[in-house]
Amino acid sequence: MSRKPHLRTEAAAVRAAGSGRMIGRGGEADIPRLGARRAWYDDLYHRAFTVSWPRFLLAGGLVFLAVNAGFALLYLVQPGAVAGARPGDFGDLFFFSVQTIATIGYGRMWPATRYANLLMTAEVLIGALMIALLTGLAFARFSRPTARVLFSRVAVIGPVNGRPTLSLRIANERRNQVVQAEVGLALVRDEVTAEGHFLRRFYDLKLARSRTPVFALSFTVMHPIDRDSPLHGATPQTLAAAQAELVVTLTGIDGTLSQPIHARTSYSCKEILFDRRFADIFAATPDGRRVIDYTRFHDTLPL
Image 1: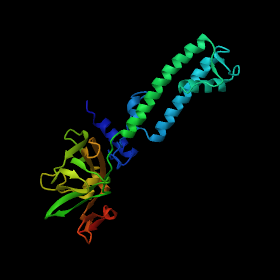
Image 2 (image 1 turned 120 degrees about the vertical axis):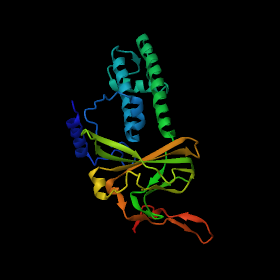
Image 3 (image 1 turned 60 degrees about the horizontal axis):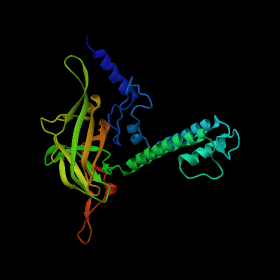
Image 4 (image 1 turned 135 degrees about the horizontal axis):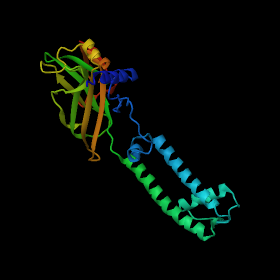
């Protein structure tokens, strides 16, 4: 039985939910997921790396408060379990739990019964594991190598040496080098097969140069549009009709940390400009040094 109606329904839903692009300008996935249900506790380790810092700190604080509140309730089970605490006072037992789980020592409160000592022993063990886990996650997030790569806001199509060429700019925003930087460029567009099935198909675009030994300043990515190119004969209208999108990826090794880094972005059909070229951004100082003008990095000029 043909799945053509189902696939077209999915395609229509995706287009209705957003712009139709697969990758956002910041490199994040931008695809609505219909029918994908996942519990909040699934893949917690990955979620801890992908959530924002405010959410991560908020979640860590809530876990800390919840654990201490839970142990405070357990201390309430036995009256007089904690010496120095007011009878039945949840606040005193909560702060006693905080002192225990943080191993900061006791002042006027201490465990007074065997039950309290056993509970205190379990709390110290759980607290040590929890603090070690949160500290490790925080350090791993902080020390994770990232790329500070600047992509031009638009891509342009215009002649280069007499041949139509798709061009876009990439720059390294850090004052270091990315070693063995490699760029990949793909065209994504909607297609319908001869059997009537909807597809979101990828085409790898051949680049004039895809690698640079040292990526320190800027790099212009160019794809010559010849007869074998998926962009041959393309117009703004045909790109819009096919919901075309350019996906750009950059990988390399951070010259400072010696760690692999990566960055990506995408260009929708509205961000691909025809018959334009990028403005020049290189200049020379009076003493002969080469400089790059980032204020004109995104500027384009008509042909």
